[in-house]
Length: 315
Image (cartoon, rainbow, N blue to C red; front, side):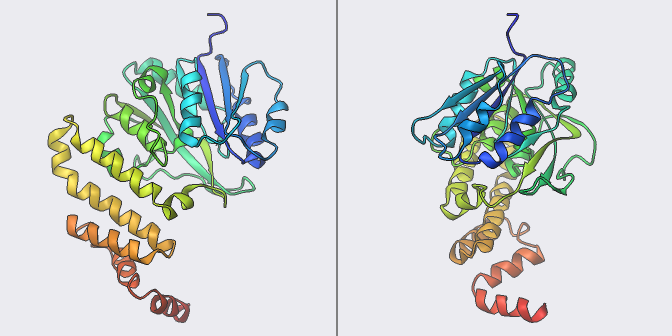
């Protein structure tokens, strides 16, 4: 028990060695004195990930390397199931924790023993680590929040994943992550929020990095994002909890997600898919599409060349 970590940092990584060093340095710079462990799960990277991990000669670090690429869900599952701490923080290896993360978050779990998950605000940084947006929270108005956020999370995946710390007991109930999901952060937060209150910390707890290697664009282009969103929504709406509220908001929730998907397909020049999603959103909830920008892009998806020419003229 003397060596039992209080917090486990799970760091899945694949071919982002350029940022891994910053990620690990930030973890090992934590100001809190609580014991913690760091579990790096390398999904058969072909870059110099192994050499960078070796730079951190620290007994708290465990390095697991796959002999062949198994995908991000299997990598996450392995790291989360290996974690021994009472609390688990999972962070992509291109993001960074702030050094006061543990110091700020751990007392909250003690004060609110029913809370399953704590998260905070995040900053957006670029490839060089320069802060481009100091805060991204649009929901809590710069104030801490404690309570039920399940329905709100169904409408939008607003929790910055690198800021999350959850009770191991809360995540243990919902592991393993289903292998057919294109991304896992929304699954993890939704399933915890279904049965636990959450706590939002107004402080910036992590830096989320935007760069050309982010997998989000690829997930849009190969439809993994749409399939995952619909899978999780369909699952939620077949379950009996929050039944009255879910029935009331179902059409708007689906419409909101289809409108966002339409925007993403439009941005990726996938115009037939943009049309399909915008039209679905309009059928489900016309109010969701009562937005000048959405309507303009919906119309432009039928004549993208004319829209591009008009934008050039206006510029």
